Length: 105
Image 1 (tube, helix red, strand yellow):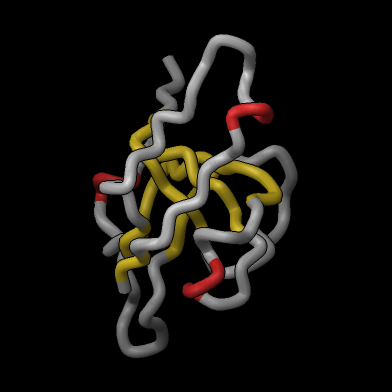
Image 2 (image 1 turned 60 degrees about the horizontal axis):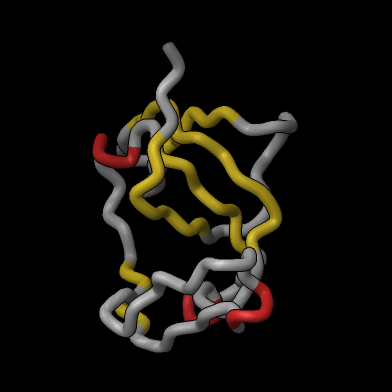
């Protein structure tokens, strides 16, 4: 599902001397789990439906360290090993992934 609606911060909300770099070409797209997600920084969205992701705030961030493919026949979901500031389950079902990666030396 591709979202074409864009949302940008008003120029008064940006640091002095900067401008938004969000273009009308950018849109949200559903991501297929793959090793390309390893080391990605993910914003945990408060959205309860995929149509809300572009408009809802994030409540935190995590770093994907590894992906474990589904183990048939019981599961259709990937298991993610993540670094995050607190333990436990991640609230919500949606995340926002960009091009930002984090590598631990």
